[in-house]
Amino acid sequence: AYSIDFPLLIYYNQAGKVVLTMSKSQNTAIFVDYENVYITLKQQYTYEENAKLEIISKIRDLYQAEIIRTYRLFCDFSTINSLIGNLGLEAVELKHISSVDSANKHKNASDIAIAVDVMRTMSNDKQISRYVIASSDSDMMPIISELLANGKKVDVICFKSFSTSLDYRFRLEKLGVRVYEIESLLGIDEFKQ
Image (cartoon, rainbow, N blue to C red; front, side, top):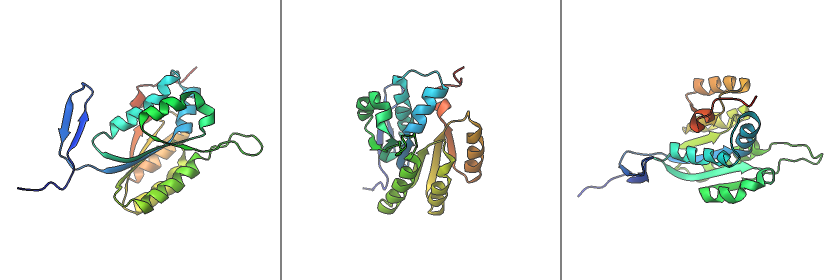
């Protein structure tokens, strides 16, 4: 008899067939700045309202061969309350972040909440070896650098089609971070006119 020191993974491929793999997998944590993704899709792309949920399953599909230990969405859910019930169907943890300050101005605090949660997760769960951050916000660079300094693999999922994203992508790729484009995952490529 022999023992296997890595898990047997079972999942369904796109054709609905059961796939077994015995390759080593990563313990993965996924953190999504969902408010940023949702608002960008709504304002910049021609994309159906309910289809904005699709990014959640596309990210899960991208990491289907890995062990997803946590999958969290950060958002002021009062801004997208029509989708809250559907988000629960995706088996993700919802992290409500208030994005309106005392002057009633819209203010995105998700990046700070993600940074704090990533650090807490890294401290509490040493088995996670890959961190996935879905955000086009370059404010994520310090947390990404900290993860890399601690020997973690980092993937970033961001929008391709913005000038600020180009510099962000360049900096990420220079650090050896894998970058996936939201447009490619969703099969979209045109801005709203």
